[in-house]
Image 1 (cartoon, rainbow, N blue to C red):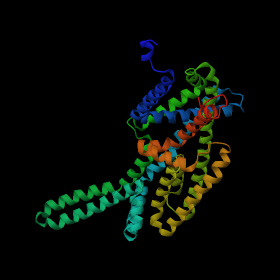
Image 2 (image 1 turned 135 degrees about the vertical axis):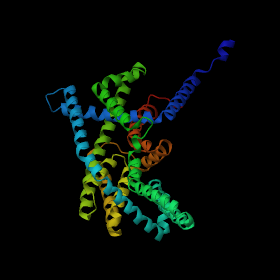
Image 3 (image 1 turned 180 degrees about the vertical axis):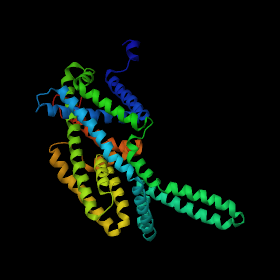
Image 4 (image 1 turned 45 degrees about the vertical axis):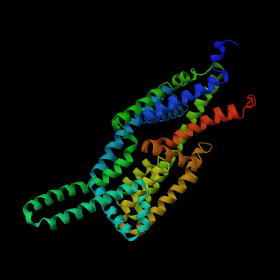
Amino acid sequence: MTKHSEDRLPVDLVRPIGLLLLIATLSSVFIIANEIIMILFLGILFGVFLTKLASWISTYSPVGYRGTLAVVVSALLIAIVLAHAFFFVQINSQIDEASDRIDEGMSELGTLISEYPTLRTTIAGTPFLSDALDIKQKRQGSNRSNNTDDQAENKNKEGTSDQNSSDQSGLQLESIPEPVKQVASTVGQIFKTTFGLIVNSLLIFFVGLFLSISPTTYRDGLVSLVPVPKRERYREVFDRTGDTLWRWLIGRFGSMLATGSGAFLLLLVLGVPMAATLGILTALLTFIPNIGAAVALFLAVMFALPQGTGTVGFVVGGYMGLQLFESYVVTPLIQQKAVSLPPALLISFQAIMGVLFGFIGAAVASPLLAAGKTMVEMLYIDDYLESPSTDHES
């Protein structure tokens, strides 16, 4: 054996080392640019929605796929404009009322916390609720600080009076929008990245639009990167993954409709203010499994607290009933043989993605897990572990 051949790596080590380098490179890129990658994934999800919806409609209409896609996109844009004209204008007109309601609810929550230390410990361990509690404590601390300053500085009455006047006016301005800011920042955190809400929305829209215009072009482009004998199999894998994401979307939309309408009727019967607005927000938040339902429940409880603890109990029980109905009736009925994600696996993956990448990571965790599960089952379990033609012991 020559010296040159001895210096070469064994053939059976080249592939594992190359695979490790590829995984390390992709992981580094994902960690560095995780926000934009997740936004692009949402764009792919939107592209799947447009493609599948236009394909389904085109099978029942004389118009071709491109024409149907144009109609779908136009209808979607019109719906967005109408939603902005009616829903967001209504939200803007009710922002003061919503702020007062949330502020009053926070006061009631603070009273309950002072009476039940166990409740305080539970809320302190919940990220969203603990942030809201911190706001309340800061306000109370600010009020106590102002009162102490007033008593200690009686010699400078005029200066102290001017300072207290400015502090009170600042506190008044802060007390009105602060609860709304807290809720809005949490709910809107999914789009809060370095690019901003508008740019992210446009990026999602145009990525999805261009993917839906010619989906086979992008699929075949990825397939061309694998060896020729395996291209047909990878084409099947990508198609199956798209079907999985489509079924996941159908299940989410069905859940949004069921929980949103159910929440509206529940809050309307209980006499909770702004029932329609809370119902719409509940529907939108339900798009994010588990976490969205928790945020929607928190909002409903904040609006129900001024009505009394009895109303809060009915709201909590009603929302839990809606979630059980959605999880065990609506989603299985709509999806049928669709995405079956084990709840423990989904919650664990959401927690990991949330810790690593924030709220947007938790938001995309469910569809990302569904797509990854499909690929692992087809490429690793079916084609490698359970393939009779593969000799694993050699």
